[in-house]
Length: 453
Ligand code: ADP
Ligand code: MG
Image (tube, rainbow, N blue to C red):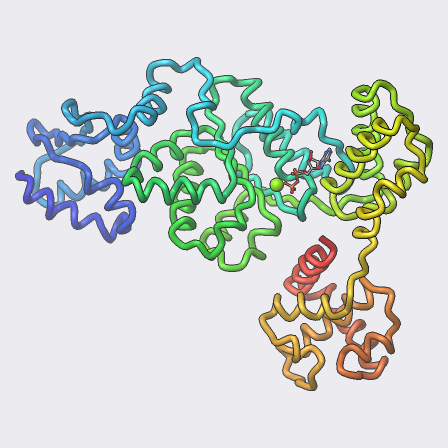
């Protein structure tokens, strides 16, 4: 067989493997020799060779045999002469083969981990107990039972904290483990950079050689087509190797707009858990834990009873805001040398308390719902009876009733002067549908979360 015939034979693999796999893995193969039933190929790196051997060797063999070549085996060897692509990459690649015991983190293109985000500092309550348990399971580093772990929830509810905690725990227990944590934005950035610098092969190699991949805020890549594509391939490659993947997003996979269907369904294949908005007990627990920490830091600064309860009651937005409030409170009290009283808290945190007090308006609800269903805001108040418009309108009515303190007649007025009985009917209808229509009930949950964020 000559190079030319191999070029023709390999073309047959395009429909079988897909254009993407073909250009990535098949085209770079150089046929060195074919003798004694062995086809010898040259590959750029040993990782590349392993990969092709594991995933495509059978296909190649079959294609060669069908072309009439007498061959029973394919082999891949690394080219000797070709210069190494780049120093950092070479180190990363060589390590698992030559120095398996060195910690690897610093050489992976990941984001730094926050040392404070550990399981020790994570307060568990009803709203996050499932997410916490799942994260713990992954952090045990045992056999992969669900892949990926998909954590979702609103801003500041502890997604990043849990992911960092997993990474800390895993590297503590198994220092050799290659754990790569980064945000979806960083993933895109690295990908674009690799494209620009023509190092896409290195990029692929690095991402496919980790033991655990964690991608934070994956909603970021929605609508970014080639990044999505690459993410999908990375994802599949790791799942095929039974490597753990942990993903976070601000909403459930099915609710991320402009995310390819195949990615959505892959993301749903593992364990999907959400972090619910905090409840009073969890907020109080978090405040107590942090206050204890601060008391030590500020040498026993006193905090009057009832202050933490007050804050847990009033600041319901998210944990980040809660933490910020406490940090400021301690700093201020220590500055003025006073005990932290309710009065001091109200003074010092006036702006935060006012912002948390913010009332949701009916107009905001209408806008969010209209946006979600891709209809015009004016249709919310208009007369159209089309189901695709009437249903979202009723959902907005329901949300207005649930999330604001407006009366039915008041709500009616804001829906183009409708009668209060129309509003009541709408609210009832949605209540009914929520028990039978799971899509609608999912949409409702999402909308509620978005409006209350
Ligand atoms: P997300 O990534 O979901 O937006 P983060 O993980 O960044 O949220 O959390 C925001 C802040 O709140 C962080 O400082 C984090 O430590 C803290 N936090 C969130 N949930 C908890 C919790 N259950 N216990 C302790 N701290 C928490
Ligand atoms: Mg985060």
